[in-house]
Length: 56
Image 1 (cartoon, rainbow, N blue to C red):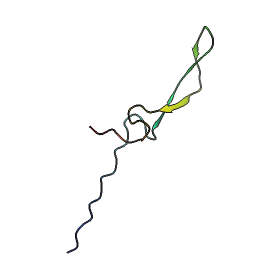
Image 2 (image 1 turned 90 degrees about the horizontal axis):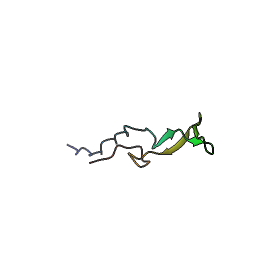
Image 3 (image 1 turned 30 degrees about the horizontal axis):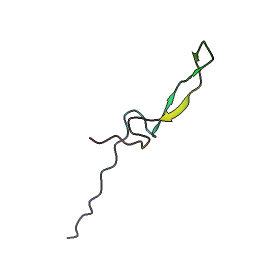
Image 4 (image 1 turned 135 degrees about the vertical axis):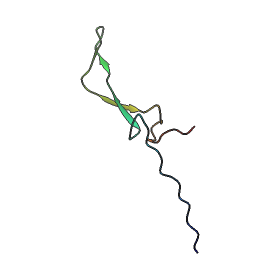
């Protein structure tokens, strides 16, 4: 019999994001800051941009 190849399990997706980036709102204005309707992408702090769940 031939030996089976051991493959690594598929990485688990990050619970907070899927691609390593999250969309966040931002504030605009001088004195009276208000939240913009637009969104900007930011690095996911849970997985640090990898898209995979952190291991303990």
